[in-house]
Amino acid sequence: MLELTRRMTPERTCFSRIAGAYMDAEGYEDGTFNIHFLKLSGSDKKKNLELAKSIPFSKTNEELKEYVFPEGAARKSGMWSLLMAMRERELKDDGLLNMFYELMGEAYVSEVDYAIYVFFGSYDVPVKGKDKEWLEGSEEVYQFLVCAVSPLAGEYEPGKPEFGFLFPAFSNRCTDTERIHIFHADSAFEQTEVMRRILGQ
Image (tube, rainbow, N blue to C red; front, side, top):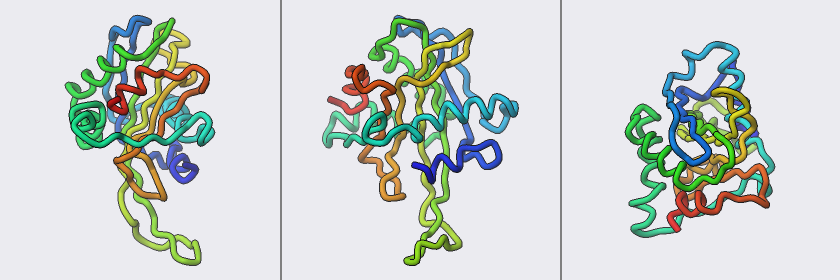
């Protein structure tokens, strides 16, 4: 995860797009946006990078845990298929995003208004030699989504994320579409219904 977050800086950001929705406490959409990440102002880039980075940079196996998608029809017709399509289209399909926001709004439990931010990133995974030295070239391009769900701290201003995920999982420095990393700021208050929707249970 540290390898990923090092590419989440204003100087060498791995993100090319950011999209999001503002939701009321009942889960109804109250405005959306979708923009190329590099078109943001310098201050907005920095603010949003901190938001995105907080998901993979959280405590592994405590706040951030890895889950396996079940096999079968439920996976192909559920959230897994939607996330794969969002990733494939690099967040440029508002129809897919609106479907995602609607599904999240139906399942996410919140007593206050909140924001759902989604980032699309690409990372050329460098080759590491047997001596653990970096070599020229890359092993693969890891294309991924980061989602951060945060209570609103002000008008259209998300606070610290309470829930989120990294998809596909970044396992052994490789893309793993069979798994997802899910974040809860407080493991005692997990979003169980959202978890069921994501994992197709």
